[in-house]
Length: 122
Length: 111
Image 1: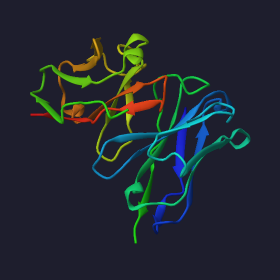
Image 2: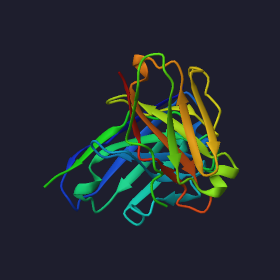
Image 3: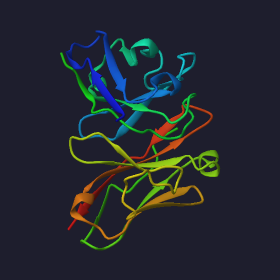
Image 4: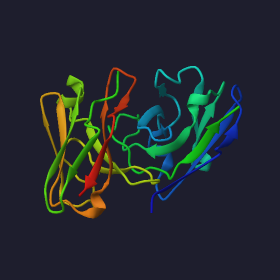
């Protein structure tokens, strides 16, 4: 079955960097766009970024543009999110999710991973 | 693009029907049916329950239905059951970018 497993979260200090990973299985990873979405504790969902099937196009939410970078390694069926200059407000559960289209224009996310918790604390 | 607006909470008794609204959807998202809904139980990942305004993925109960009117989308849960108690989020795709936006979320309580 389709499965997405995030990893890489933890506790970090403000100003540091971190890379999250999302390992995909059960589908042809290389033909679908992929997304990152986050959820701060007790808050709603926030879309962060999408990358096209071949990694040639990336789009970001204004809130993370310039600090976060999405990438993928299709040979390893793995999606990444590089987070730089981390702030207290980046504390959240980070989810990866599969698009239904190659370019990231499928319009919805299905399925989602279980999420990885990142805590930014001084 | 700001978050789409949803009521903070909706409640109903078992067997009743409830409707959750999602307002502020862009015209192109409405025209091209780029609206989806997600169910999230506590400490769980969101799950797609409606896509393209009205479509249900395989395995999702037909008690869930979606609709739209103007720039507002709605999710209706019929025959409310205890397992429907969860948070619900709408989402839309915006072709002009940034590409996706979620609603503020609605907590559904089964009385």
